[in-house]
Amino acid sequence: MLSPQAQKILYDYLNLPFTGITGVRCPYFNNARLKQRAQLKVLTGKGKPEEIVEEAKIISLQYHAGLFDKGGHCCLHNEHTGEKVTPEQIRKFLVDHNLGVECSGFVTQILRAHFKETKNIDIARKFFIVSPKRFLRWLISKIRPIENIGVRIWANDLNTKKINWQEVEAGDVIVILEVSIPTKHNHILLITENNNGVIKYAHARAWSSEGKYGHGVAEGVIRITHPAGGLLDQEWEELGKVGVGNETFAEAKSAKVLETRRANLDF
Image 1 (cartoon, rainbow, N blue to C red):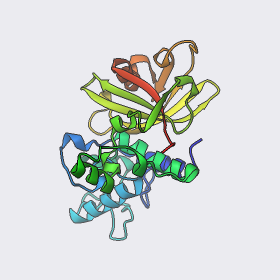
Image 2 (image 1 turned 90 degrees about the horizontal axis):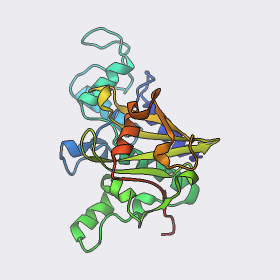
Image 3 (image 1 turned 180 degrees about the horizontal axis):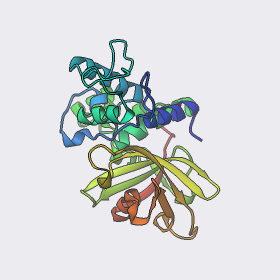
Image 4 (image 1 turned 30 degrees about the vertical axis):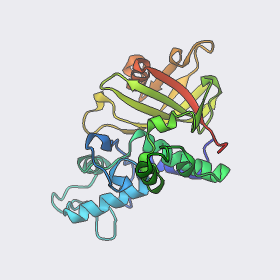
């Protein structure tokens, strides 16, 4: 299983640690769409849950949104509308201000904690990101490793090795490259458990069916129904949806590359 600290980070993404309100699931945010550089990692979709919370408080006070008091506690009622503040209202605020986490940032933050706790290895510092021959990019990657670890870094044979999908365990990943729907992109899932014929995963994603505010960190399962088949021959379920109704499965099915990988810790 994931280490205790890694489990806590996962839980906090699913329930952002706001003071005075519960049930705020972290939205999805990918900075690549805005093409902003040299930002704090929390503003690029790479932040930890507590960093997202703190940035939300700062923005709320800066723009007088009335969602948090100066002590960082969630207000019982919005000072502008007088209405009770709900988790949905906080999520909408996060989305409107580009606060959330993207898939590789989510996986990297959790597995960085996992391997620090279990192996005393900081994968963010050990992963190969760019060749020293490209000195400026290499230097930036050393100063800001989290911000520079994307899905293709996880798919690099120098950092991870391909394994049989039936052998996956907590801490492994599913890499999905060159997805063709709804637009071309890469994606990554974190394996959290493989037990009794069920593989559990978690990821940060944005389903097209969920609109502007419904996306975010989610969990799903892959039930092993055809052991002799491939990963796509199994039953994928997320949010009660299976088959192509499960957009995660549909994306995996449309991808050019679908691999199960394990971090190579022989640095």
